[in-house]
Length: 510
Image 1 (cartoon, rainbow, N blue to C red):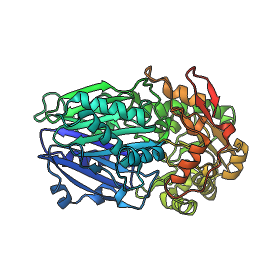
Image 2 (cartoon, one colour; image 1 turned 60 degrees about the vertical axis):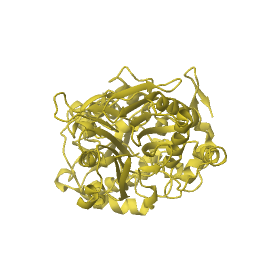
Image 3 (cartoon, helix red, strand yellow; image 1 turned 45 degrees about the horizontal axis):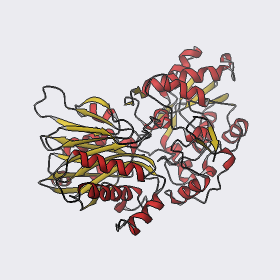
Image 4 (cartoon, rainbow, N blue to C red; image 1 turned 90 degrees about the vertical axis):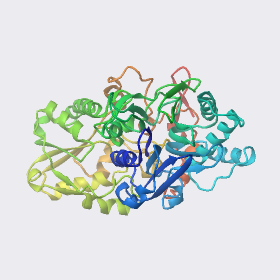
C-alpha cells in the first residue's frame, strides 16, 4: 500500500504535490518522493521518512516545473531500508520516464527474466515498481518506434503492459516533454481517481491521486474514479485523453481499503469510506446480539481510529453508551506494519493509553476495525483489565484474517495471522477476552457493496482466500512471502484453503 499523486498545472506544482502527499501520509510512512519537470528536465528528491521530514525548503526550491508526481511509500517487497527503492523511479528512454506505483506485481520474477533476456533491460533494485517502469518503457518504445508520441501510442503501450503483468497496480508516470499518464489494473484492486481545479479558477490544473481526499484537500473537484484497466493521458496543456486498455475489465476493489487503509473522508469507486464503516457497524451489531446479550454490556469503546464509525453505529443500535477509552499517540506508526512481534508488542502501550474511569467496574465491548496478528488485541484487552474492567468483550468490524495477501498489504505470512487455521474460540483464548465477535464475510461484502451498483465484487482474499486475478497458486504465495519486507520464513500455504475464481463465478481449488 502506497499513496501516489500526479499533477499537470499552469503554475508550479511542487507545493501542490507536497500538500497532496501530506493528505496521503496514512498510506505510507517509510519514504516519500517528488519529481517535477521543467523544459524536459526532471528534478527529483526522495528519501526515507515522513513527508514533513523528507522535504525542506531547499529541496522544494530545487523542484521547479508545472507538472510532476509524488509518492509516499509503505514497502511490502524489496528492501525497506534502502533509499534506492524510494519512489519515483526513472529511466531515460524512451523520451525519459518517471513513475510511481501503488500495488504489488505477482509475476515479477518472470518479468525480470523477460526484461533481461528478451528486452535487454537492467533492473537495479528489488522493487517491483522498477520492473513495472521498465515494462512500460519497453512497450512505449515499441509503440512509438521513433515517431512523435501520440495519445494512441500511449494507450497501445498500456494495453501491452496489461497483457504482460499480473497483480495489483495503480500507476502515475511522467513522459518528458509530453504529459502525465495514469492507469489502473484490470480489476481495479488499488484505488485511483482524477479531478480538476474548480470552474472559474485563475489557474487550471488536473490531479490524479490514490484517494479523493488528496484532491479535495488541495482545492480540486473530484470528477470520477479511473476505471479498471483504463488509461488516462493528460498533455502539458491540460487536455485529457482516456481509453479502456484491458480486454475484460472488472471492478474488484480491495475491501481492506474500506475496512482500514483509506481515510474515512475519502470516496473510493463511488463509495464513501465513512458510510461503509457505519454499515459494517450495523451488520456487526447483529452478530454481537447473537453472542453477548446487550444487558451484559455496559459501554462500547472503539480502539482508535479506524473503528470509530463502526463502533458508533454499533453502540447506537445496541442502545449502549459510546465512550472514548483510549487516547492515541499519533506519532507512533501503525503496529501491524511494524517489522517484528516484539517491536509491535512494545509499541502498543506507547501508542495507546487508557482512560481508567471508562473501564473500572464495567463490562466493556471493545470494537476494532480488524484483527490481523492478534498482538495488538491481546495487549489492549490486558490494558482494559489492568484499568479495572470486569469483563472485556472484543468485536471486529472485519471477518477473521485467515489468508495471505499478495496485492500490496503487509500481512502475507500465514504464521503471523492469528486466525489462520484456528477457530474463533482458539483465537479468543489467545487474545484473552471474555467473548470474541467477528463480522462475517458475506455481511461485510453486503455492507460495503450495497453502496454502489458499479462493483463486480471485492478483492477480499485475506478474508475468503479467493485471489481475483486467478493466477495465484500456493507456490506463488510462498514465493511472495519470501520476497516480502522483513524476510519472512517460507510459507507452506494450506492449498485446501486456497481458491481461485473461474469464469462462471464459482470457486475452484487451486
